[in-house]
Length: 486
Image (cartoon, rainbow, N blue to C red):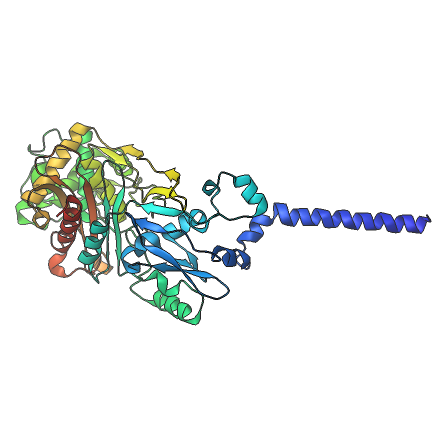
């Protein structure tokens, strides 16, 4: 063979080698990135080439799949879509997914390795198993009570089983129908655009993804911190709080809404019953920033990774403040902000003897034949306080319902502990206040852990309801009654 022929042959071999290297790079090392590229429609076509697994509430599927006869063979359908939208989220051929549809997409679409005992072979053969099912922790009756109670108002409800952390209700209003844009046609695009442009933000999950100043509901945390650190040893003894209480380092008086609070040295129990800002602000300063912040964090504040498995927004309690700011933060003002989920965790932790459980929306992940892929178990989040301190805080909350601002939450045949809250906001606090209520309930005569704790926020309540003791407490009561069985 001539020198020219040998060179040509060598060049061809080099080209073949380069092609092999490039093919390997694309098919092996860049495969995952190309699969996830938004311009790659193959995965979407494949994802909707067969029915999707279902999301269940109890034994009932609240999702489904319908044939389309188009490029995407199936599209997602929803039963009572607006009732469960804050939990299911959406799965859209054109706009992706959210909430459980997003966090559990691998299982629902059939790509989760746990769906097959031959995961490696399935990967090599690129075979997809039937989508699995997601069994939620929701209590349908509690969810219906939450949504009915909120009605058309902007607001949210989170209800938790204190002993396990199972989320019993997760409601956000106004809601939306995720089936309205599950496809990829012109009607789906129009529905999506209407929702995105709606100033009421129906697709915002206010229970998990929106934070609000919690107002006096935060005083449950402040009271727990004061008791746990020995600042208060007797809830009926005078606290020494002056009246009026002037914020440290300022000439500003912390004003109370109730004239009965304007007496020096009110006890902690009286302060919680009457919702005396001056007493709780004073106790927050006496307890100190580090200890108050530590108590708040034990309930979920300042945690940027609180997954249910849907990620919750970070609730905020500042760890660098002066004393006047601490006094305001101790009554849920300044820049303290919380999701309804975290305020439900506060009530649940108190109800559970001081142990806060990690909140979870999923009970079990299963294959299409019902076989278990993963079974969720209760997980301790943090221990906020001792059982002895928890008993004292429980008494403060029951007194606030029996004799104080939370009377509308009383349930015949049950023991209810709760706390109202009013959160001013807007320019010069001129906007309609947020109305809060957080509570727990158990059957009268029972010494077991209460089966339900709840937080309610109403973002556009009327002025007469702005204390939280009106509409918010009524919504909380209906949710708790649903869990208690009537």
